[in-house]
Length: 68
Image 1 (cartoon, one colour):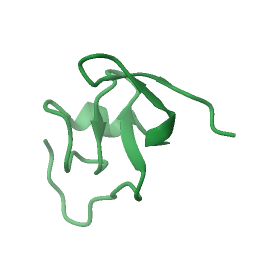
Image 2: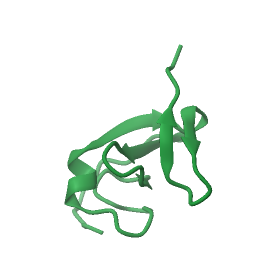
Image 3: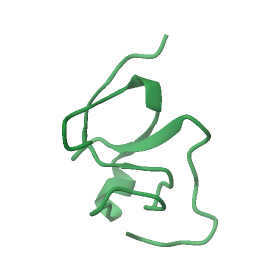
């Protein structure tokens, strides 16, 4: 986990999702994240509504449903 001051945090009911590995975090740089969130995750992350993410049995995101 990377720690920076003034870290961008996801609003309520949203989460940052790493598009490369499927890990999630409430903070873009790893605050309240799954184990192993790193700089690559932060760079490859997108903000998604929690209701739109589909997780596998391990908790990793395997799909983000289209909003709308």
